[in-house]
Length: 378
Image (cartoon, rainbow, N blue to C red; front, side, top):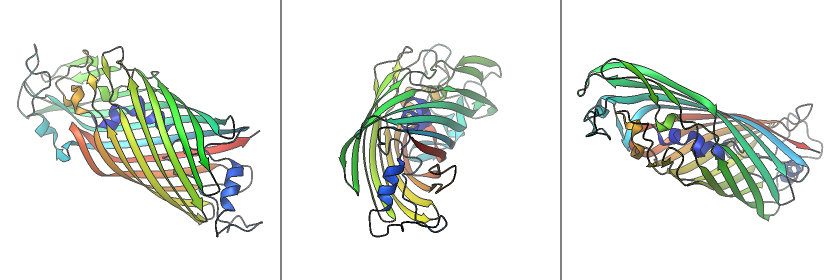
């Protein structure tokens, strides 16, 4: 299973679903700073709208007291190729590799099953409230849907394919609560700290039917990457710098997750470190385009669940995690007037540039973010 899938609700979406917010007053301040400020009474069709962070950036801004930001984001991620290190491998190659449980009673010497593809969807609901001029608080609640197709090979050895089977899991993932605190703020440059906690609200005991090498089906605990949560509390540190001047905006964000202790099944998902840098340009007519580059590290799983024992690489805790370098292309729009004034929908498409994975596991093919956000002032 791909590293991101392994921690989809254990870590990534704890960071993902607490989205950036920009207050209306802050947007006005940005639009009048720099040399390309909009006129006092611009036409909605010609005005240069102030920039917003890419939709894939979470916890990007601190809002003011008396303001509430609500947001919704949908993420769709596709994985359809196995990899070991930075090399692609086939399911047939996997059938010749040593089974992690080889030597145990009833376990074959080589893997008898391998994932072919996987789709992950997340509906993330978030809210952010301004407490003081320097401090905001956020909560993020993800609803996760995972679908995976795997192939089973016939008998205790060999590469003859017996058939395929599918598994699906869905439910609430790990909920995250965080605070944002301003460290520095002027008309162009802004720096804030993020500190949060993820809660073990996602299930780690999902099961499903699997096709066995002898042609029978059995119901058993599904692999780590199909579980919905981490089963542990986690610390969510982060640091964000962003700037805006004229039509340009830019920023860099570092985030992480440190999982605390073993869960009730005897394992801990790997810790995560993530750095992302972006630049954006205000196109006019309310649109902002962005380019973002990201580097992510995810550790493998420490310990194991004794109920996850299938002869598949997805059952091996060592086959999770690795390094990824990603590129994201985004477009945001901010409604300039009317009943929907200030509503900001956005879209971002992410592709991998390089992946070096603990494997074999499924690697990322692409990820799509679509979302909308709005700040209310009371």
